[in-house]
Length: 192
Image 1 (cartoon, rainbow, N blue to C red):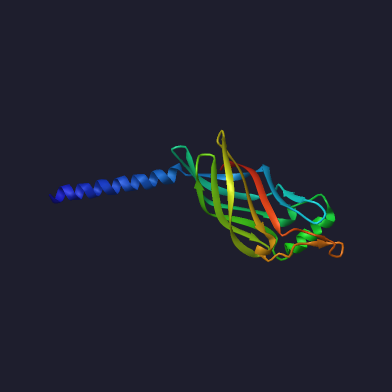
Image 2: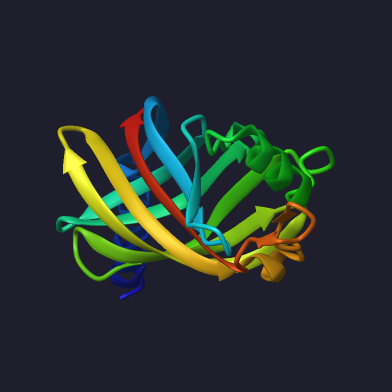
């Protein structure tokens, strides 16, 4: 009887080890493609709507695909705030001052949890760091598989004051930026 229990214990341990090993080997690391990315910040002002765009982020994530459903983990994306450009030098200067880029040069997002409702749609929740302040945000994401690459698109809305950023003003306060902004991204990730 002792031999049967020992054999069952050994079999259970082997099955568990095989499951863990299988999970480790089926996980893939993907890195953001340097030439296929777009990060936008969109907002309003008393004069007109505006947007700033960057295409120079760095980052990666791990993914495991189970039954066609991707599971994303260990993601961190960052870019230099001063790579955001509006096409208007004065607006860029005011934005960098509001973002305190001299003291906090990077904008970063670190994934805490990603829940996929299907193979193509989900929610990515994590820590967003802007101007030295960290807040939890949730991006609505869309996922597309293109060969061995993943194309991720997403967006989230928040208030500048959530990050203790005073909405920028221009022309002695006659033009005021709205407090609500949206971040959108569209990026291709390739296996490392």
